[in-house]
Image (cartoon, rainbow, N blue to C red; front, side):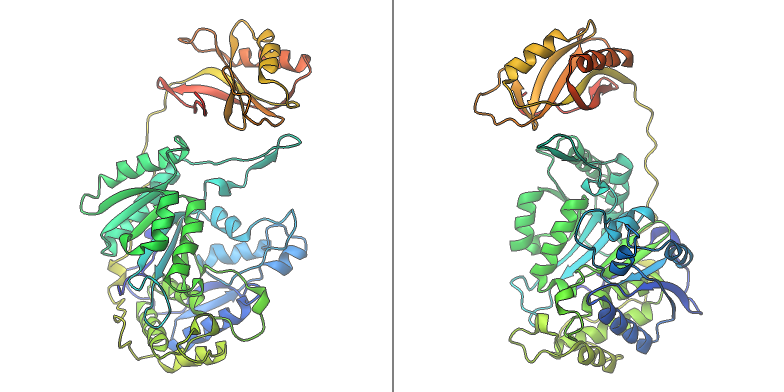
Length: 501
C-alpha cells in the first residue's frame, strides 16, 4: 500500500518548516453523526499532539431552519477567512425547496476548486473484492451542473445549465498532473462524456491533452464516463489518478470509496488558492446518530490530510500509523466489522487509536510524512492567456413554450415570420430535430428550440436583427422562453448542431 495518499496541500501556501505555535483552524461539528465523529477526531488529534487551536462555528440543519438558506451564519465566514483551514463534520440539508447545498456554497464561495479523494482498500482486514485498489479521484469542484442554474421553462420542461470554462479545466487538470508528479503516481486518467457533450466535455478533454503534453513521464488515458465508472467498480487496479468534472467526480468517488470496502473510510480535501476544507465524504447518517456506533475514520483521515497541509507531518504520521494498526488489530466499528470480529463503539474505537499512537502497522506499509513539505503539488499556474477571439453573430436559437403540435405546422407559422436577415433553419424538441425531415414517431413536448440563421451564410448580423425577429414572434402571440445567440469564434462554430443534423 502506498504511504503517500494523504499528502494534500494548497499550492500557494507552502511553508518552509513546521510551525512552532498552534495553528488556528475552523471546526464545525455538523449534524447527525457529525458531532460524534468530529469530537472523536479532535480527541485523537489532541492525544497525538496536534498543534492546533480550534475555532468552532455553527453550520447545517439548525442554521437552515433558523432562516439562513445557505446553512451558514455570516460571522462563520469571518473565521474561515481568518484561519484558512476548515475541518467540517457532515451536515444535513433539510428536505424541501429553498435550501442551498452548504458544501457547494463553501466550495464555490472560497474557490476550493480541487476535490481530492483517495480511495484505498485495506484488505484483508476490511472486506473488498479489490484488495489492491489505490486510486485518487481529483474532481473539479466549482463548475458543471453544480452551478445550480435551473429554470422551469414550460408546463412540462425544466432545464439545468452545464457550465464548463477553459480556466476551470486548466486549473483542475494541471492540479491532477502536479499531484501525480509530486506523489510518484504513474498515470492520470481523464473521464468525460465528450462523445455526446462535444463542446463542454470536449473542452475538458482538449485541455487534458494540451496540459498532458507537458508531463511526458506520466501515462495518460481517457475513458467515457459510463464505461470508466464500470471499470473503476470492477477493475480499479487499472487506475491511479482520475481527473474529471464535478458531477462525474462526485459519483465515481463514492463508487470508488464503496468498492474499496466502505464509504465510511474515505477522507476528502477541498483545495483552493487561499483556503482548504477537510471532511469525510459520507453524509450525516441521521438514522444512526446518537447510538455510539458511527465510524470516525473518514473524518479522521481527512484530518490527517489537514495536518499534512498545515505542515504537521509528524502528527499526521503518528495518527495514520496508529489508525492502520487499529484496523489490523481487528478493532472495527459496525460498518466494517463483517466477519472479522465483534463491532466496537465509537468510544472504544477512538480509545483504541489513541492507545496505539506511537505504534506502527505490521501488515500495511508504514506511513512516512517527514518530507511532506517537498512532496506537495507545485503551484498551479494561472489560466493560459489567450488572445480574444473574433466573435461574429450569425443566428439565434429561440426557445418557445407552445402546445405540442405538428412540427411542420409550427414551421409553417415561423417561416412566415422570418425577417430579411434571419430565416428558420431547424426546429428541435428536447434536442431532437423534428423539422425539416423529422419523424412522426418522435415524441414532442411543449418546449421547442427554433433556430434562425443569417440568410447569407457567409455574413454576420447585428443584434438588432434578433430584436426585430423577437418582436415579430411576440406580436404573433408566441411565448418566448429565452434566446441563445449563435456565434462563430475565429471562424469556428460556437454552438452544437444538435441531434439529427
